[in-house]
Amino acid sequence: MAARTLFDKVWQAHEVVAETPGTPAVLYIDLHLVHEVTTPQAFSMLRAHALPVRRPDLTLATMDHSTPTHSAQVFGSVPIKVDAAAKQVRQLEENAAQFGIELFGMRDARRGIVHIIGPELGCTQPGMTIVCGDSHTSTHGAFGALAFGIGTTEVGHVFATQALLQRKPKSLALNIEGNLHAGVTAKDLILGIIGQIGVSGGTGHVLEYRGSTVRALSMDERMTVCNMSIEAGARAGMIAPDETTFAYLEGKPRAPQGAAWEAAVTRWRTLVTDLDARFDASIDIDAGRIEPMITYGTNPGMVMPIGSAIPDRKGDEMFEKAMRYMGFHGGEGMLGKPVNVVFIGSCTNGRLEDLQAAAKILKGRKVARGVHLLIVPGSQQIKQQAESLGLAEIFKSAGADWRESGCSMCLGMNGDTVAAGQYSISTSNRNFEGRQGVGARTLLASPLTAAASAVQGAIADPREML
Ligand code: SF4
Image (cartoon, rainbow, N blue to C red):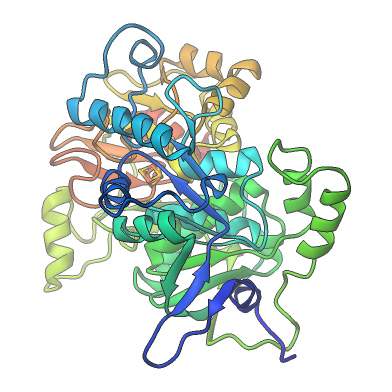
């Protein structure tokens, strides 16, 4: 057999019907992750055609996008404040019950952001095809899975058939070598990559992150990197599974156990790109040159090293529109600019290691007067771990607002929003106009940079506080 990439291997193993010039492939789906926002119409589609969910055992639902993060609304008697959110939560409860889908509901200790609970439960495994009605499904590619976001109509197709019509994307190797310097995180790495290749640099491709830098990353860090593949325009991002992956998965409740575990690891070890395999394209990245990064515009490609000046692109209409929205100018520096809100959380940076990084900065320090620091764990399990490790106490002593898990301020639909005109440093993945609330101005950065800026009350270089 010809040498194959990791992506080729996973794709071919799931191709029920091969694509032809006139028809897409039929791809089998191993795991369908479901949340409350992109599913109501898909369930209605099933009802309209009197269809069941084909494989409820391969379908898993949680609530995250529109769930409140205030304890009183999650566990107390206070109703969910946002009406639309309350309706979506209710609808998912009814739909999951009617169609026999396992749901981690509002008060379930395993609830959390869909891209965080899949891995932490061991549902996400190497070699799988995983889909979800959310763009950042690419997160699961950190395990060597082929994982991508789908639209509501496709959610309906997967419910009904456990398969999907897909054209095979091309492959792009990102060869990343060198050590990340102190104070430079996986978030800076992926922002640096997007800065280098652009927001459409990966369009039409599945990325494979390769090289010594990637091998040295923890699973939490790999998930941060794969999570933002979509922000480079890619269909998905993948990392070949290795000992780090197996160590993370071993003993997770839904991972294979006993003899099945041994068999699975043997199979997973074959999920690497063959030595002579050819990618459609490849790009080299020098990780040693990456610094703490921050965005200055309205897409993640408008990004720069934190100590640099905003590039001056007079005459570039998109740039000028972004500068007007953000209230910035080409040529000015970012360090020292005041911030109003700092959000640490989301499926990009709401994992335990992200919270540990933030705690490193916040320990023994105070959040600057007038700054709202909101820290939202990615899942209830992470919340519980952070509390038992004393991180929550560090956050609260610093003056941070510590909440229940959810997507929170990643997007302005659950009651956690940034006011119009305010500046928010966010560890999430999108800085689009209005993403965190109408008129909100979002600056993407790492948990270290976010925490350092919360303390300073202004954009700060975390390397000075480590
Ligand atoms: S945290 Fe943001 S990107 Fe992630 S699943 Fe929630 S809304 Fe989507």
